[in-house]
Structure formats: C-alpha cells, structure tokens
Image (cartoon, rainbow over all chains, first blue to last red):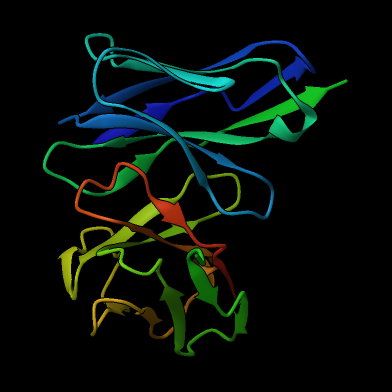
Length: 110
Length: 114
C-alpha cells in the first residue's frame, strides 16, 4: 500500500517563503506530484518529480529525494491568492492511479 | 478549449436510491479517472479508464459502484442502493496519455445521501 504524511496546516505572511513537506511510504514508486485546491474548487496540477532534485516553475518549486522518500513544495513571494490546500500525491510503479495525502491548508496573512 | 466538466454539480438523494454522475473529459484525452473526496481529505482513487476499458478499478469500494465509458469519451459513474457513507464530492480527471503525471480535474459532483 501507499501512505503519505504532510502537515495539516501552515500559516505564512504575504511576501514570505513557505515549504510544505511530504513523506511517503510506497511499495513501488514512479513519481511525486503536487496539486493545489481552493475551497470548493477542483485540484489543479502544480508540479511533478520523478527524479531526485529540484524542479522550478515560476514562484513554485518542488524537490524530491527518492532515497529519503521525501519531497517538498516551496512557494516564494507568497500572495493572498496562494491560500489554499496543497496535496502531495504519489504514483506507484506499474500504476496509473494517484494516492493523495490529506492535504496542507495554507493560510497567507497580510 | 473547455476543461473537464461534470454534471450535476450537486445531487441530493435518499438512502437506497440509484444515482448517475457524468464526466466529460477534455477532448482528445484518452485517460479518465474517478476519485472521491470527503471533507478534510485528499482525493481517493476509484477507477481509471484508458480508452473504453477500465484499466484499473481497484479503488471501487464495493459492487454498488460501477463506471462506464462506452465510446472512450464521456464516462458515467453509477452508484446503486446509495448509503449515507457515499456522501462526498466525486471528482473526475483526464490526461492526454498513459503517463497520468498531470491530471486535469473537473469541478466535481457533490453527492449528499439523506
């Protein structure tokens, strides 16, 4: 089976940097994805890591360490609109389904 | 182009009734996924279609749940003899190929079973 751990809530100040961690346990691993979901909205894809290292997309970066079964999402220059829930998700080897964590609710305050 | 659409947006039904939830994926996307999401939880995988066939239905909780995609585009999730525990948001997602690394989600159908 697969399980993921991420903090339930994080609060950060507008303009600051925040890191959301995710650790996972999986019987097989293909990649780690990150999704953003605003209240009442659909999850939207942010990033995907299959190999160790940092992937950067604008203000968002994602990191993966396969040996540590660990990844994080880094959000820079926080804006109020970044207040949302962030989910890490793993895709197991030989599988097409995503297993999601319970999500981290990010609150950006002025 | 249009994104993934789902109808209805809200469905209220009584325990024991039958419901159908519809998903229109992004045109040309061959892969289609159904998830359900309970309050405060992440999406939970139900079933994956590649074309017309269900390639992985390991997430369906029991035989009351069934899904079809007869022409490889629109999909319908069917729930028989609904129970109060089926209340959740049912999300549909699609992706262009078999990788599934980036899935495009619809707005969901909020199902409430009274």
